[in-house]
Image 1 (cartoon, rainbow, N blue to C red):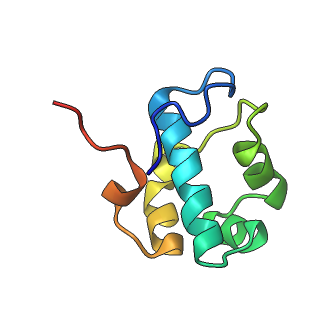
Image 2: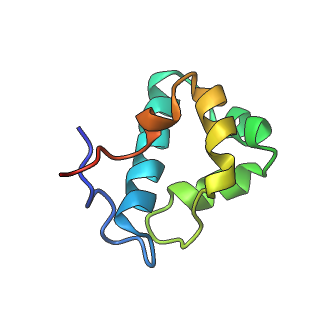
Length: 86
């Protein structure tokens, strides 16, 4: 299970950003999807995915990428976001 503080060392990433980044990487690797294949699905460069997955880079996925991320990873939006705390 991912922690909301999974990437505390990523500058300027909110807890939600960090969770999304780690969850996408987890699902991507679990499903055997390369960075290149994910980049193609998102219409971004492979370098972009590498920057997003780097803990030292500020690059993040945007909200507008959620539909394509969910489709590429064959999951629901909710699977990519942290659970809501009450």
